[in-house]
Amino acid sequence: MTAEDLAHHGDAEATPGLVDLAVNVRRDPMPPWLAGPIAATLHDLAGYPDARPATAAVAARHRRPADEVLLTAGAAQGFVLLAQALRGARRPVVVHPQFTEPEAALRAAGHPVERVLLPAATGFRLDPALVPPDADLVFVGNPTNPTSVLHPAADLAALARPGRVLVVDEAFADTTARTGVPGEPESLADRRDLPGLVVLRSLTKTWGLAGLRIGYLLGPADLVARLAAAQPLWAVSTPALAAATACAGPRAVAAEREIAARLTAERDHLVARLRALPGVTVAGRPSSAFVLVNIAGADRIRLALRERGYAVRRGDTFPGLGADWLRIAVRDTATTDGFVSTLAGVLDEVPAAVGSADAGSGAAAALTGRT
Image (tube, rainbow, N blue to C red; front, side, top):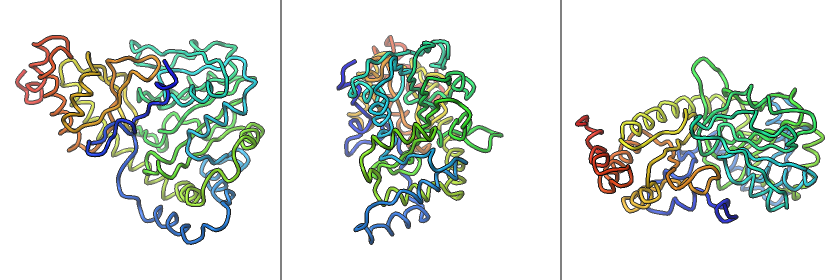
């Protein structure tokens, strides 16, 4: 795995003119309660950003003191701050497959990085026993990008211990929903009892704010102070702070739950359509805004899809995966139906990609019940 591989992200695949199934950012129109406060800041940008109101709002959402919150220019900045501020870590471990920025940030700061690879055979489920007991800095995603697996909170909590900083990337936590659970299932964002726990959050996915760069981290006050000392002055812009304040309010939290419920139905539709195709295996039990699939010859399938107007995320740049993996973003059912029909046609035209000519010729037929 090269540094160039770790730096590859879905936006490199989503070139203009293609239907974007490579980037996991929701594209719906921004609601007035969010667009209004952001737009209002554009009339008063002469002053320096004041993060205190937004910090207080995020702290209230997660029932924490304000000194346990650090607003960041996107969740990705949090990985850089952790890597820079915790240079004394002796054994950093990154649980893969997952978002590559934690490892990239660690390597850029000079850390030797150890990988724990979760196997596909177990559905990429976290096994706390795989993490070395003496690891003093551990990164894990929940739900994990790109696997879409939502690990049980108890398994994550089992990794916390004195002398260790446990970093849980919850950038997609607000995309998860479970019947009978009023909030975000398996989130640790409100937990203050676990030693060394740092939770990273993003506001860019559900609310389509990737270009605004806004996220935050939650953790013990002393550690947050160390991370703040490593952060550039005025790192979060005034418009981004307005977004953070709006997204921390009860209206936003309720809207997130509604969006997550709709996303669940749209994801179930995508998974059912994909599982109907010969040679396509959906990994694990998807729980977020994307699914991971295994298809023999997926590298060629991805290029064939591009020729037909669809961008999907290659999987071989994620440690622990390879050329036969693709990540596909969840979209509305009409977009899904168009994509799956196109994928079925590609599988028929590139039969070697699913193992045999017979397997390939059954893809389109599977969609019409003619198998």
